[in-house]
Length: 269
Image (cartoon, rainbow, N blue to C red; front, side, top):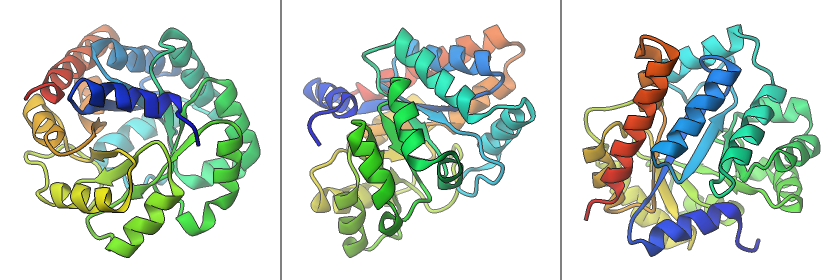
């Protein structure tokens, strides 16, 4: 695939001598409109790329914080059309910022693979992160994604053997999502020491940028990960700020401030 909006954004950060900052929030949380405003606030605060989560009733890889947000969104009646509307409004407001959808495979399969790829591209989406889709079963999706200029990001973990890393990275595009720790998502007091080794092993398998997620929650941790990764992915820490906010406006201020803090972190030498 030729250069995409996602690869261009990551290359721009690299040209500045720094890692990219990638922020995640689920669509429909705290409401559909509130979620759109919050994701816009991530970009205003300094995120280079954003991930829009597609809320799922059984988010097996997500910790309690994101599960809570997903539950709020689902109880609010969020549907795939709301996720696509979120992508469209954020992409329209920030045309230079890649907007990815992070989703489990089941909702895409039920919606229709070709239809989802077409609708995501029409909304201005840059691609998908598919944490539970095995690369062996991904051909239909990858074909549809490529037809619409969408990147497909796969996830690797510290448990991934070198041969597996080669298989997964050969199938993906945009970047490789390296899960820094074993287990589910969530903020942690320290970034797992497995992350640096995983990045080195992944880089040996692919020329794709390697971005690290699961656990980063402050500027110090962002700087630590930025020293060895091409991108720093932050999700639970943003969700937590929204959950703890006294009101919607305070929530937007909190996520904007956290994004600015993390953006400063990835720029530390």
